[in-house]
Each structure stands twice: as C-alpha cells, then as structure tokens.
Length: 78
Image 1 (tube, rainbow, N blue to C red):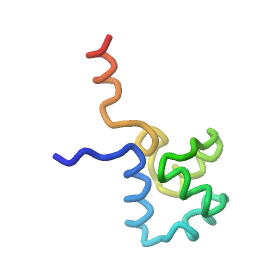
Image 2 (cartoon, rainbow, N blue to C red; image 1 turned 180 degrees about the vertical axis):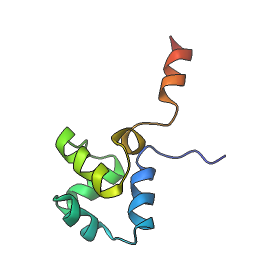
Image 3 (tube, rainbow, N blue to C red; image 1 turned 90 degrees about the vertical axis):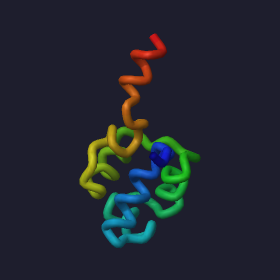
C-alpha cells in the first residue's frame, strides 16, 4: 500500500476534477500561489480557507488536511 502525504488528497481531487491550480484557486477564492503553498504543506490555511477548499473539492476538511486513521494512531500512542 502506498503511503500518501496528507495533502496528496487535495492534489488528487483537483487533478481528478481536471483543474489546474489557477482554476481551482479561483473557484476557492484564493490566489494560485497560496494554493500551491497549501498543497506543498508550506502554509496552513485558515479555517475559512480550508472550508472553501473542501467545498470546491467536494471533500471534508478532515479528508483533505488530516492523515487517514489519525484517531487510531493517537489511541495506540496514548
């Protein structure tokens, strides 16, 4: 099984929609450079920006910005 970086879900969603960064950013009402920073993990979006991204991607904020099975990992570490 391939290990994915947390924001790979966002990049995959954007590409599956057939959108480049400029088009996706416009729909989410943010700049292309900001979207690029978010996709690379170089910037953390505000809750408002995360919400807008999730609506455009038709995914939950958790699906985009949090590692899958994070709860299970936290329980094991506790």
